[in-house]
Amino acid sequence: MNQLKVIGKERIGHIEFTGIEGGFGKDKKAMLVKDIAKIHDKELRQINQAINMNRKRFKDGIDIVDLLNQSDGFRKFAQENRLIGSNRTQHVYLLSERGYAKLLKILDDNKAWDIYDQLVDNYFNMRVAIKNNEPSLVQQRRLQIMEDNAATRKASIMYKIAMTTESNSSRQSLLAQAAKELTGEMTIPVMKHKEYSATEIGKLLGITSNKVGRIANELGLKADQPGQNEYGRWSNSKSKYSDKEVPQWLYFEKGFQAIKEYLR
Image 1 (cartoon, rainbow, N blue to C red):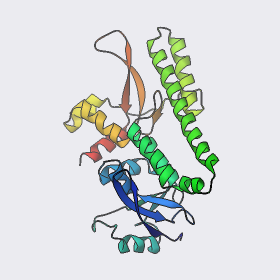
Image 2 (image 1 turned 90 degrees about the horizontal axis):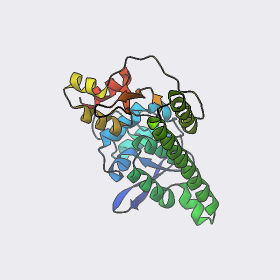
Image 3 (image 1 turned 180 degrees about the vertical axis):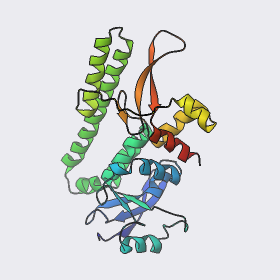
Image 4 (image 1 turned 90 degrees about the vertical axis):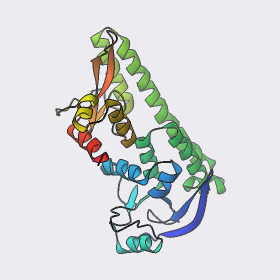
C-alpha cells in the first residue's frame, strides 16, 4: 500500500481542507472528494454520483482510491481520521491530481477550472515544481489545458456553423470535422439504443423537462456537441418557433436510469 498521511490543513481562498500525501505514490498529494465537494459548493452525494456514473474513466490507484474498498490499511486510515460518515457509507473517494482533472471535465463549468488553477499552483505537484524552480512543468500543464480548451472552442464554432447551413452535405462535413477536433475521429458513430427526450423522461418521472436537463448537467451526462456517450447522444430537431434545426440531447436507457436514480 502507498502509505497515506495527513499533512495538515490547506486553504484555497476561504475554504479549508485536509492535505493528504500518498495513495498514488510517494509524496504525491491527493484530495478527499468530501473536500472537493465543499470547495465546489456541492453536496458530497452529487460528486460521488458523478464519479459513480463515470467510474470506468477513473483508474484505480492512478486517478482514484476508494478507502472503503481497497486494503485494510486504507480503511483503517479512513476510520482513524473519521472519514466514514455512517454505517451506510459505501465509498470514501480520494483523488489524485489527474483524477481531479477528470472530475472537472465532468463538472465542466468555469468556476471548476478557476479552482483547478488555484489547486495546481498551490497544492498539487505543481507547487513542488515552483519551489524547485521548475516553471516549465507548470507551463507545460497550462499549455495542455489551453490546447484542450481551444479544440473544444473550435469544435463548438464548427457545430454552430453546421447548424446554420442549408446544405446537408456541408453540415455533415462540418460535424465530422467538429468530431475530429474532440475525438480525433472523422466519423460520428450512431449507436442503436432506445432513446428518450427530456420531455418523455419528465413525463415518466413526474418532473419538468427543464429539471431533467439540469440534473443531466449536474451529473455530467451529456457529451460535447455533436458527440455521444453511454448516456445519450446529440441530435438535431426542428424548432417549434422557426424552420431551423436545433440541437437536442436524447437519453439512452442508462441516461434515463441515472436521472431516475438521482431522484430517489
